[in-house]
Structures are given as structure tokens and as C-alpha cells.
Image 1 (cartoon, rainbow, N blue to C red):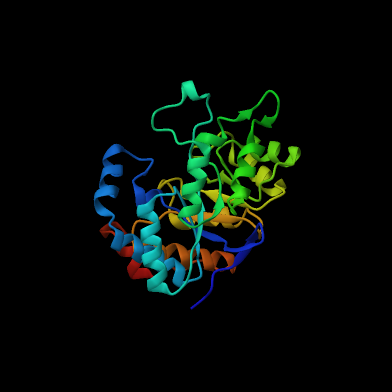
Image 2 (cartoon, rainbow, N blue to C red):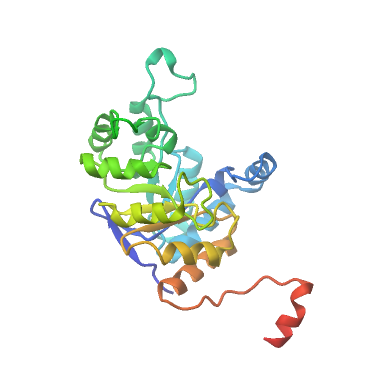
Length: 283
């Protein structure tokens, strides 16, 4: 069985393919009905089976919210696969003044504490938090040194999750204590703030490894199309984060990714409909 290629983030070895969790937890970027279906369909047993499939191929990075339920699924998968996962947590927390905080907002201290308690290795404030701190006029990320220090104090590696390509540039130029970035990147330009070629340049010039997300534009691109674009336009130290709903989808994205990284045309099984019957007969 092939081991997936690896990279280094802040001194930690990490698979270049990362397990995404939006399709575990109910964020489809499609519709409320789809979100509801995900939440009703996914169980602890099903999620553990998907994660275990990834782990069995050496894909040990998993990214998501620091939730006890998700951590329980990861622990089940670790026992099944006999291999540890590298937990990459993206907590949200209050960055407003106390009088303007929402009742549901966690404090930074509480968000980082739970991330550590749930086994977090890499901690990257979520884009909803990070991007609220970006000052485009001053070209800085306000107070970020306060939060990265808190992350270091808890023994985790700090990074930044962002949808703003400027965030990567400001962090590099200002020398903030971060070891990696999360950045939107897909051929469809889905949710991206600027064109894909601009983000391509930002990733290429980043001083730290970049974890790209939404390579298939939340299901708007075929796996082979979305993955071919991203794998062929990032650097050897960069990563691709993929969300899956089933074990078969996990197997498929692993196989396609390995073929692309080896510069081979993927030989994945194609979906079949009656309109393709004559094509299948010719093949």
C-alpha cells in the first residue's frame, strides 16, 4: 500500500493530503437541505471508517473545529488503523470588546484550551476570526501576536486560516509567529476573493507551507478536475485539504491524487449512465 507524500510544518511531519471535515459536520456550501442530510447521515461509526481509510494510506492530517464528537471519531479511527492522526484545529473566538461579544463567542483562552485538551497539534484561528483582524489600510493583522503567543504557550504550532490572500502577504512581511496558512484555492474560483492566478502567485511566494482548501469547490468540480489543477500548481511543501462523505470517496481522492503526483493520467473508475453506453462499448 502506497504511503502518501509528506511535508513539514513547524517541525512536524504531515501528509500532503489533509482530511477536511465540512462533509462530516454539515457544511456543504450547497443548501440547508444538503447540510441537514449530512448531519442525519453521518454517524460516529461512518466517520471513523472514513478517517481510518485515510490513515491506512498515511494521510494523517485532519482539519476542523475542536469538537469532542469529532475527536471521538478520530480516536476510533486511530484504534482501527493503528496510527495516530495529526489534529489541525481551527477554533473561532471573540475578538471584539467584551460588551460587543456574542453570547455564543468563546474567549481566546477557552478556545485554545479546548483545542489543546482535544489533542491539537496545529492551531489556526478560523477565517471568521483571522479575517476580522486584517487591517487592509495598515497592512497588518491586529493583535495576532497575542493569539499566536497563547497558542505557543499551550504547546501547539500556530498558523492562520484565512480566505483573504492579503493575510498571507501581511503575515510574511510583518514576521508574525505562524508556521502555515490555510488558503482557498480551486479552479472554479469558488469563494475566492480574487482570481485563481492571483492566489496561485500568493501561494508560490508564501514563506511558509500552505494548506489549500476546497479544491473541488464544494462539489462543483469533478474530483479529477479539481485535484489536477491544485496538485499541479502548488509547491512540494504545500498541502491539499479534501472533504469526503464515504469511504469510497476517500479511496478515490487518494488514488487520483497519487496518480497526479506521479505525473500519471488517473485511471479511476468512471461513472456510467445510459448516454455513455456507446463510449463504454468502444473502450
